Image (tube, rainbow, N blue to C red; front, top):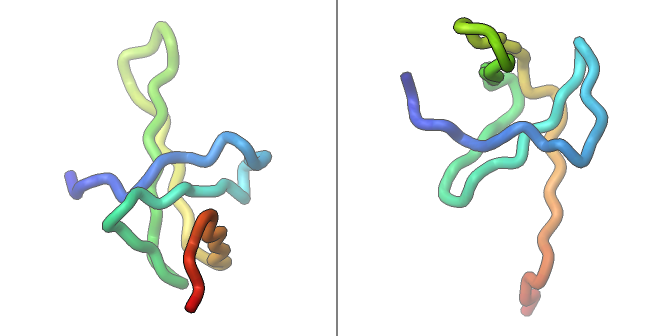
Length: 67
């Protein structure tokens, strides 16, 4: 398995067709990348996997110093 690039972003609503990813430091995603999320379900042995393609990129730069 490749290294994780981030985590599912729980502050935004998710639907069967849309979910958000918070990208980890030193990682990146770009348009048309394929993303696979894996979620453990309590009481089940198998994980649920969701996959999608990056169709939108948003950034928030908190505390960034702009010169």
